[in-house]
Image 1 (cartoon, rainbow, N blue to C red):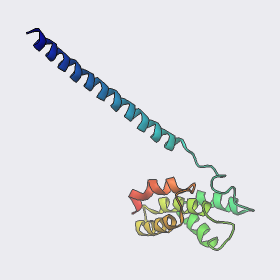
Image 2 (image 1 turned 60 degrees about the vertical axis):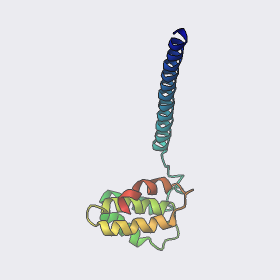
Image 3 (image 1 turned 90 degrees about the horizontal axis):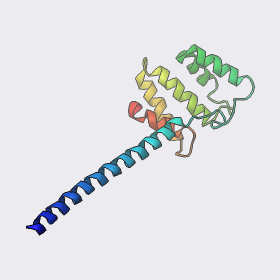
Image 4 (image 1 turned 30 degrees about the vertical axis):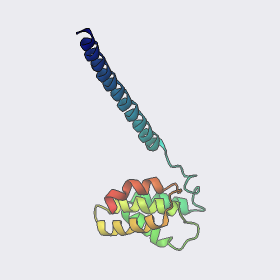
Amino acid sequence: MNTKIIAILLVVVAVWGGWALYEYWQSVKESKESDEVTQRAERKVTIEDLGGALPGNLEQEYEQAKREGAAGLRRFLEKNKNNKALKDPRKAWIQLDYLILLSMTNPGEAKAIYADVKSRVNPGSAVYERVKRLQHTYE
């Protein structure tokens, strides 16, 4: 009789210990995942990551175009599409700004711009994380 009680007690303790260990493992896993998400969210892309400020008055033109919204960015991109000073990753970042503004009025064109940017951006680029975040919306 004593051995049965001890055996039952050992099984109960083993089950309880296993459950406690599982809960601890889950909390550690969730904590690690939330830390990774926080680190990714906190990573801010700076102008230096994008190749620095645009040369000459191109930076002022870009700032003015941003204030004008989608139409301004469209004019800026069309005007400077062959300008060698405007290159990736900065050009890709500006195009992503434009497609976000454009998506409400012309989602088809926004998707085409997204596909173009995605084809040019490599995983090591400063723009890559932003492209990945927009993927579910524009594909």
